[in-house]
Length: 622
Ligand code: ADP
Image (cartoon, rainbow, N blue to C red; front, side, top):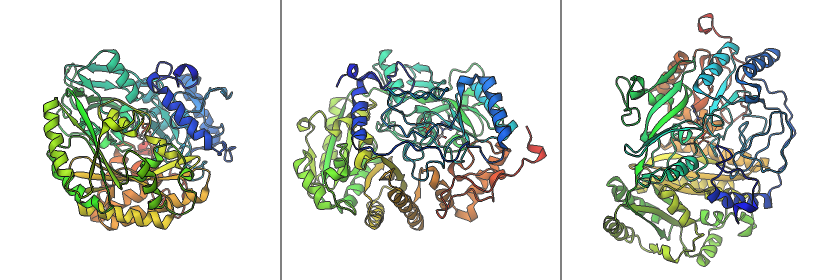
């Protein structure tokens, strides 16, 4: 399909969150597959107007009028339209302020709520969206929020799929959509291999700009999908698949608006006239950057990052492993190779069921019965597939000049083939449309748009992730796998498993896909996640990231020494954000005004509201 036939999905040239022309056919394909089986209609609004707790209705609208006058009324939208879930593969459109409906364009992933809602759609919704155009605008919004005691929730692109998307944790918080107007690439330095970006710069945009400027010596590191923001992904500690995969660890320098409205630059950025902000992250004195990651202590308006020098070539490879139990031996083989950087990028050990789902075809194409997907059916399909019958797949990439790659590939081959039944798949025999080539592109820094096709496993597909961390040890991998497998059988919902090995640790990502139009399935998916989190914690495993609805539970598992860590987090929160206006409840950290009022979600009640908010004490009025 050519982009000419499909003018309706905005490209990067038209919108900051559009799709590069080279990928527009994939965006359309993904959308067509979704539309083919979609049945869910946008819901009529049932609980309007949405007003955050802690402010009276008339005063709320007065406040909205004030900020509209200050930033321009085109930059403030009340969220009172039907909640359109949009499509993950489509970005770039926003409904116009006058409320008229754009009919000839597909709907993008929303910035007002979670487009993959797992609880009632009217939970986790914003009351309004504000589009600041500069750091000073963000500062104005923060002052405004303190004046009126309105909670605000910053997003960069709002595509945090599987973890809550753009939704605020507190019902009625105002979403600060930073990306729409603050989307400049402020610097790319081909000598130092660094960049400086605003919140609305997507991986697509950064990649295209590097190509346009002809910097052949630079690579960027991309996650599974390229449509999210570089800055938001790093803040949420997302990963990519070149050797620079840990995004947070490659950042250098932040500009932050604090919850009381100060503008701060961290690291060398605090030194006037410096030329080292992006090359040395620490500066002098306490290193504060960590408190702005997965937190509600500041709004990040700029971030610097290291870019990878082009290594001079790469070879992607794929091995398959026959039996479930092979996982243990494989992980034992992977650990020393990964720590020694013979395996240079994040190991990607996938369960083979996901291969069926990556076709973008619904589950019913392969099997129409209930319960967990039968293993024999999976093998039956794989026998016809170029990968052949297997249970685990290892996708990896080697980097450097040809001779160097050869050496590493030989070691990897020798070690992997020690697992009985292991097979090396010859890439030359795979069709150009095979998923292997998508992994090859991502692992060599080229953003792609295929990964989420597995969400189409069910009509109206949504997904939620369970993401525990373990040491890279065979016994731990097997224990997590067995635990998750028992839940898979118990809840009758299919799970997709991906073990990602950072360096010394493995993250198991268990994706649970559900039909957004099926309340029973959604409830089961959430119960399965809650049960997994609890059982994992009992065995000593904690999550590295989680869905908004699960954040209180996950935070509660980090309880060593009478919850000392949370007590420190709360002390910091109260000091930095005395009025509790910034993303209350994010990562389970509640400001004083919300504490003890039932805002935490524990599983008995999936509500994003609590029993009111305390008035501010006289000393906290700013
Ligand atoms: P992406 O840009 O990858 O789509 P999101 O915008 O969905 O990411 O943000 C991911 C998470 O990080 C959300 O919880 C969001 O509140 C937080 N976040 C995103 N951007 C910022 C920012 N600029 N400052 C502070 N927190 C942010």
